[in-house]
Length: 86
Image (cartoon, rainbow, N blue to C red):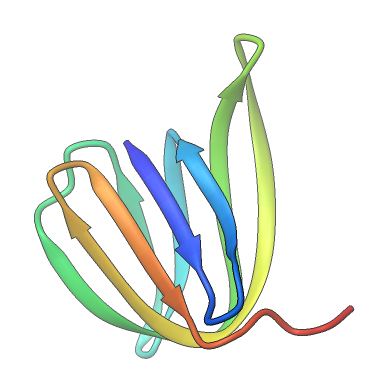
């Protein structure tokens, strides 16, 4: 499935992924390939992305300060409030 994570300032991730886990407002949830259409609010927390790199699974994490996620036709779009400064 295809994932985009967008903040008001920039697009911080774009690409094919195997799965992703989000900090939902009512608890964390995971999206896999072929997931039913969904719109959900996100809380402050960690977005975990699992993608295939050189035939191996790789995990990437992004911290967000809340937002909205939409899942439709194997495309996941995250509109994140912001990404905390490190």
